[in-house]
Picture (cartoon, helix red, strand yellow):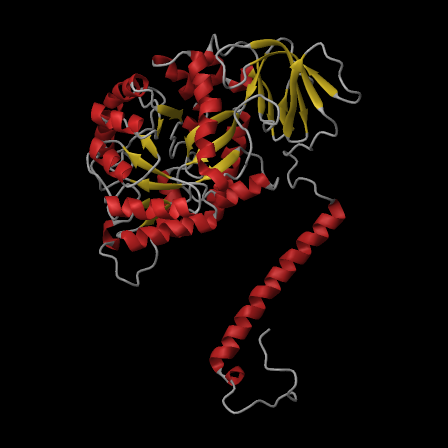
Length: 486
């Protein structure tokens, strides 16, 4: 590894040469071990690729089609309009939609056709507030389990997410970088992921899950469990917030998330408290904007939301307890509201403690007002689920979308969960991991498509039962489910 000039005779070194020091020997040994492992892994990977070719590592990953595919006999929901379009066919070539054309045109030789039997072809669904690493794992398990087990659980849930028709998710806190990489490289199946990395939180904030005996933390104290696994990052003060923001960007965050106020699931913060100061928000915003992206914040109350807005954030997550002044402020600034249909129904995240349940009920009481303000002031509104720590609840992802009929028509809901959510994903600018059009059925868009048995614009509850009603799932031009041609 490191050595003195080769012009000297072996074994002869000048007086005081650093290569004779114990420190140098330890450094050299470390480097040699590190790079030897890298070389071994790289060599093994290269050998495997040359022997077997660039095939998926899992039998669950379908091969890329060998020819273009034409979806015929379809009614198209394009993710932008509020009506189905008939008399069209959609041609996919490679990873993209090649054409949306009149059904009667001659079809090129060699194109495979899939007759959809008059069913609806639409873009894959997008969940704008998902937790890929934490949705399906109990909090107690997350706090103590081996990281490898956590990743295996998340990979299993990622496949289930895709098979429910969700081809893209914006991950709003959690160590999802490795899962994203495994999906993108074909190791496991799952949706496209826009990762935020660890949620940055102040001491005692929504992302502080330390035990009381860990406080006060000594200056040289080891990382908390949340910090160590990348679920949260505790940072106080401008300098620390700036550091933690840059760390998430370094790891590949497409946007940043900060906790701006009290939370339902967190231990120490009442729902009404505001967290972080305007300069602290500005530090994260500066880091994000230097990388061409934006900051989103967890916030419910007027004070929390308004302080974050003055700090330069671009997206409010939740917002159920906002007042009218705050709603106008969001609208006037042209910001996003990424909110969820939190109601006291069978889809609510279960809460074990009376304190968390009381906070949850307070949030539920504000949901109708928040959606009312969003409609009244024309706020750009995205949809997501925010399912946490409950594997059984993840199966209801589409059913939660269907509850939006309390405030919106089915066509508006489907637009929100496809084309509108895609606009929010694009806010990541150059940090967008999948540049190009998504959430729409049009020429040049990513080929993430669903075929639904029935008309979801007439009955959006069809989305709630994907096993029965979802006949085909395509992501990235690959067909992951197909009961039309089986």
